[in-house]
Image 1 (cartoon, rainbow, N blue to C red):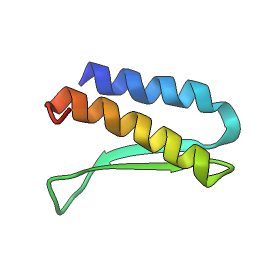
Image 2: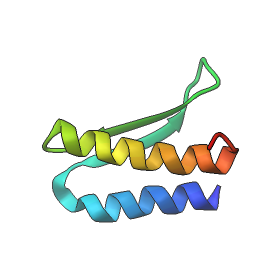
Image 3: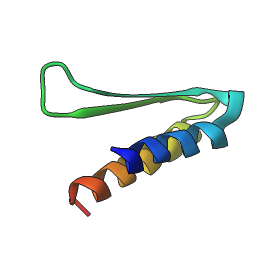
Image 4: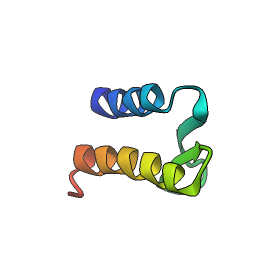
Length: 62
């Protein structure tokens, strides 16, 4: 989905070399897994929440 891809790319650009983001569908459940690594828990939560918000908007949960 283009909007989700754009949201991931924007978060990765913001993060730079401070960490990484992985978004993938679950192999066993109807879920999309959003994982991030960053220097602080606060930054991890920020990026995961940012991507989750884009996904929710795109699938109509917001």
